[in-house]
Image (cartoon, rainbow, N blue to C red; front, side, top):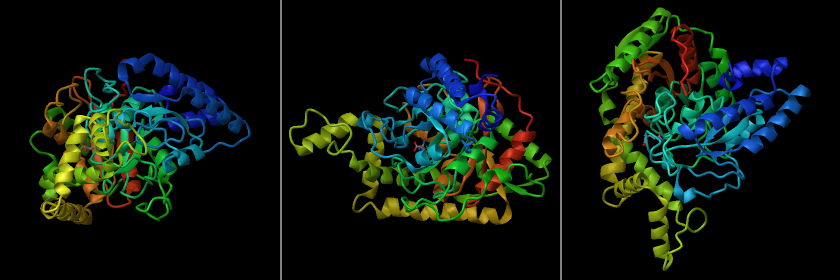
Length: 485
Ligand code: GLN
């Protein structure tokens, strides 16, 4: 196996034993990037020179015995995280040449832990989308089938891990943008509890929903990255001031005696038969590990999509008001006066989906409509959250499919926003409730496309998610496959 195909924990063992160097690992990753990137387009910006220089420093540190949790490991960052001195576009023309003057907290934390950054990954513009097709920098392709989308909005981060163009990556999840692409690309993806990971330096989409999390090749790597990024940050007022457990300590505990809830509203019409079959096998596997499964109900599920598509655009319309061509970002050269400059900069700088969301959101927040839309949606959101609180009184974990279908074709849903929005029907409730969720590979369709199973847990119970995900992964007996590129 090539070095770039290994996991964080495998590489760490080799580094510690002196069997390889960070320079060799980074070189292997860039060799792979050069070979497959023209077909995948997972990255917007590559950081090869810095990565190689950082690898030399990591090798020096290892020689001195300074080995940290992520020393020498190449990690890719979604292009929504501010990186000091490196272009951060958010997939948009309006930020095409934006170079942040500071690092996001998670970037700082990963660097502290010894990580090396390979580059900034492709994404739907401002994280609005489920296919990475709204990116100003072109669509990312699914490594398992280049005619298909990788999911979104963190499609580049998912594809880069699946194609071994990095060892692991980070993304953000507002309605499913980590878990959905993880499922469609056959990797592990976790959205932590709202507030578990600092969002300082994350470009905001919908502030009451956004959360940062890892994409990895296995569950152990997910725990390692969670150890690296979780925790309170005085610079971020919504981050939770609570200690972070060692997430690795959950991996081998097993789930004997647990109760796993299967929400009947998530096994509905419209779920692809092969997805359903793979998830049913996952249920059997979990039962074989000593867990009891029971049907549960989350009765307000039917309102999730509607609630999300009021709250998220409303918050986006407010967050995106800052892109006016004045302080930073794209400015139209043709503005006749201030108002005209605003109008032209925004009209030329934003793509169609972002404009659609700004219009929807501005409408929902406008005077006379606020109570009918945003306020009402917030009230229903409280009911959705209560569904989960009630469910977790009777079960430890909830299990669902991650996505209704496997990866769809490029262009298949771009003409119909509602069809695109339905891709997140099984992931959105988690963000509305603020709870953590993880997607783990659970098999392949006959056509060779990956399928994911989603586990959900109560507030701050990422440890439990990793516990069941690790037990499942170890015992699922899934065929080991790699995309044929
Ligand atoms: N696909 C959903 C949307 O378009 C979720 C995106 C996300 O999680 N960032 O809003």
